[in-house]
Image (cartoon, rainbow, N blue to C red; front, side, top):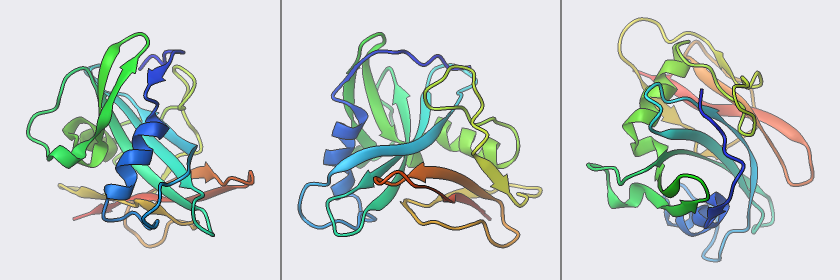
Amino acid sequence: MAVIHQTTMQPTKVELLTDWLPKQSWYLGGAGTPVLAKAGGFRLDDPAGEVGIEFVVVVDTSAAEPVAYLVPMGYRGAPLDGVPETALVGTSEHGVLGTRWLYDGAHDPVVREQLRALMNGGAVPQDQDEDDTPDLTVTVHGAVGDGEFDVRLSRVLRAGAAQGDTAQLVAEWTWPEGSTTRGVFATAVR
């Protein structure tokens, strides 16, 4: 199980996402700077213990209605070769581990493999803040079935239950006024 260090990161994940998020094609905000707050998510363990994996939910309150975004991230001790430059969310100085390269998990092979394992029952979602603590609010509805599959991420989160027979990953996040909601974070696709 991954160890969660009670330390600092400079810049923080939210600070890095404030710069990175508006450059993404799926960002719904305007030209101004987003006002982000961490709103939920969970972790997965890398069996090799090399990559930190976190599914981060941030809410942007800069528009009239808040918008929740999902950004899976892979935290690495060295740059990741073979990914687009835009996959790098940024670098940060971790108080215990030193320089970390934070990548958009959609482009990180370890993050994607562990997400597929979760969707197929082979990984256990972990709490964002507690060591060795499963996150029981994260569930997979439906079945992946036999054979290869990929996963489509829901970058802009919407409240709602899983639908259909395809496996869907459902988790929760918190809105700025304090209410908690659930929605589809990812869907298995063939």
